[in-house]
Image (cartoon, rainbow, N blue to C red):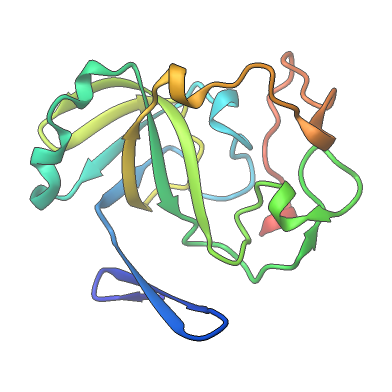
Length: 175
């Protein structure tokens, strides 16, 4: 839920209740106006987008242009109620929510790794955008291959299901 531009999340813990507050840092502009037809991951997108950072965070962009790629964290603002098992893209059977990348999650937070093309004032032009237009931006981090890449990592149930010749796009299953 958004309250005056802030996202409030409540988590129940064993002995206490903790509140988390996220401040929207900007807005992501993309050519995608609806969920159907979105690439299911940024790796499958060649589309450009603009990340508009609110003016009060402009100084935080210093030195970001030294990186070729960035990680953007955002709110799945059009997410639907979630279930512990959902049928993801690239599978015909339901999987546990934490083993898939559905936007419909207990905490609807998404991330994408995108190629940074240029920064002009408060606007970051990127390639590989895979989010809906007007998606709320939560954070930006530099992508660092030495920290963020694990080529030998297991792909779990996705092993052998990703065909590099075909661009998987979303359908109506999460709408």
